[in-house]
Length: 339
Image (cartoon, rainbow, N blue to C red; front, side, top):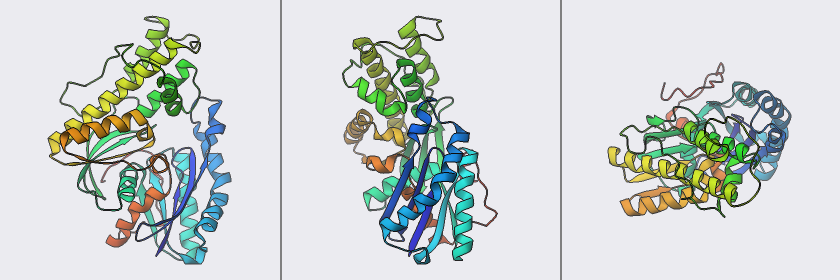
């Protein structure tokens, strides 16, 4: 059976087609990076308007790549939560229209939990139960994932998400948008020990994160204590060292909290998803930690780390369980967990 999935939660318009055997036939992503780059971050209204323009062409391209017709689709899936409400509404409206027109079931998928299911798809086998880390521009959360549909929140960020911190530090350093790849590239030539940035909650029992203070520390290291704004540094050792030290602080905290969550839950599997999980130093540090702890690590390839519709294949589990979405399905901007 073929499923068609739509993802419009933030700034990527994506349509995927996959089977009930989790075989991806197409996974098309229309990026909005160039639209938002001049603003230094995602502008919700711009994102929503771009989704309106891109959703149908992206749908056509997915059907072409999969070599299927709309008549071959047996169910429609949409990521309806969490995300930017205007952006989500575009995908929800399109999915409802398709499901009604084709007279097929409508299914919903949670964007955050789908990031963990991307690791399941890449693994090609069951990875549950496990500890799940979702680390992206809008979310940094740890879960105890009992099944693909049962997630218990262990902890999350109390302020900036890790990806958001990367974007803000990239802006401070004048590296452009999106910040994650830009900071990683700059950090490659820097010394990660040059600046002893604090690691929030590193030695506390809580499984929460805080990256806002780290962002402020970067600004102070560059311009002096108490200075709220200043020009970005010129290319050179200072900029590279700050980028490397910032990145290392983020990696250290993420790895430490994953180790703590594994110890507290007793699980021997760690699944990681979200755009920041494409960061190579983070992937390497997680792999080293898991090897030392005798834990299996599951991280999808980079094309399944960033926002995409193929990870909505978690809805196949809902389809098997008969958990269909009503046609009054709404866009829900905040994460509500298993509610």
